[in-house]
Length: 411
Image (cartoon, rainbow, N blue to C red; front, side, top):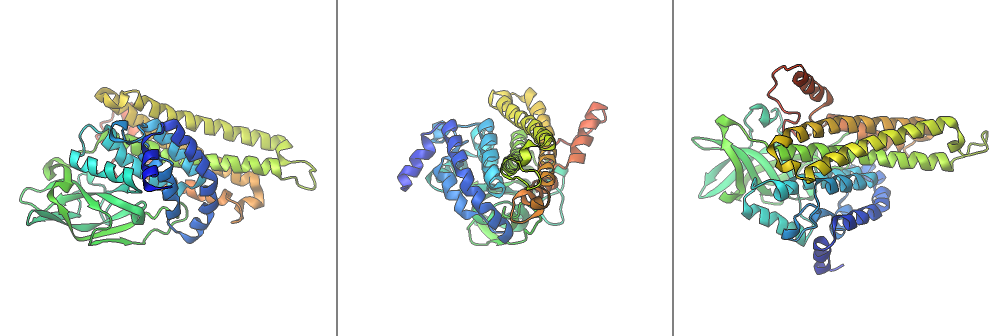
């Protein structure tokens, strides 16, 4: 496919067509997923097909040449891709979070930078992600000042610092870096950094039990030169960083969607196993056993619950509730609940599939153990379950809590 044709497909299809194309990619993504898990390697070869299918421009507004999908379409796309390869899906989800702000963020980004990111994303594979978390420092949204800082030299910023858990680090074109200015009256905000600029170094620190191919590595910035206009969304350090509710809603719901996609894959695999395997002593497929029918029925119930939850929140957001200030708090709360519920549901599903598969389930030659490792890893993402429950409990008990369900930290 030529570059011109790729740009055309990223502009013209409707969201339903793009989602159909995403489903067609799943078998190929799934074939590659196991080896990337073993190698802990970034699935770079998956990115061009995402672009060609229009997935990378799914949430770019139609008026700007994109597909014009909203949060519900993003939920479906991420879940679908995750059913083939969840590491690729997490990279896609982080890309959508940033482009969701460009499409729906009401001038959170300067027009110059918005136009730049959209133009590059339409023209080729040009992924963007945020970098918030730092070594030895809690979330800046708790009041801590980022150690990543920039000073003005001859009208340009020089950025220095280190960030952790930058998903897709070696595949990114742009990184939105949280940092502070080195000025008499310092400001905290965001720097848009070209990922391949001089002074940007990816340190391969990511070596985990699950989600091994996300390339969520450390990134070091050493005197990275940036135009003055690449600093935005700032406020005085004394006032703290103002996080967008939109950022939190997209982050929480799309994280849930990744692990829901893994649960879909586990469901499909255990159904294939149960219908295709006939033990000699039984003389019939495992699917004929009441135990398997009941357990897989429970998986169906749990999966349907998760899907209804994340889709309905995405649909509410798209219906305009996300633009109504009095509804944003409810949507943010519901997205936090969805993350908690869907991740726990996904863990139950992969655990059940693993148990039903028996010895074959723990074989590296089958995907069940990988699915379970991947969804167990979801519990590391902020906000963790106990924090969400505690904040909801405080609200119900009218105990003052100024901390939202999502605190701005990405892990």
